[in-house]
Image (cartoon, rainbow, N blue to C red; front, top):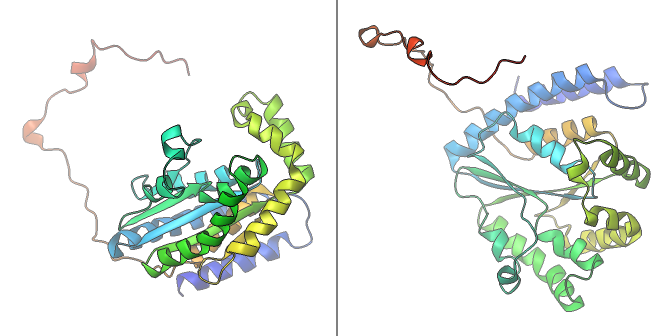
Length: 281
């Protein structure tokens, strides 16, 4: 049975097990399925390296929609040298004087790499438009040139996959309130996030205009329903795997060597006088 058949069977099993239930996906099913998908991501990684593929994955969406969460699950069991995450800060004054796409292009993958953009050049169609960080001329020029730019990437052999994470206004409010009260999450709540709540409908209009101009056959937008974080993660990773025709790469059998007995000495004794971390747990 092939990998796609396995994933189809897994998806049918998930649908069957959660049929007739409401609310969040059951944790055990989520974790079991995530393990299977992460194993497939390792196979994808080996295939990308073997073939010298160049893959770009764009993650966009509402603030607090869960983009970072799915990126974390994609990357936690693969090599950071192959799966690179790019989350650029606000542009410097020098970068503002450059070609708009320039700082994104410098982060594009070489052969054998997958780059995950945690927000991307689509900032111009979203936050820059809504917050008036760019002129109307710059915004219109972007909507016109972006499809041509992405077409050139695809024609050059890059694999470009774009995701939009969408949540309801009620769910965004709930998550933002949780960030206010949870000391582990407070860093996630920026002044820009708070402003985005006030501009909810402006962002909706910006999203719709962006889709109308840049949802193309060669670089389509894939919308992820993200009110349930667990389902969103599994659905997105599964879709990513199904979007790339990877195959299992032959691997040599691994044999673990034993330490050379001719070089043996009491290596633990040499540490006895060193400074150890206090064992509090």
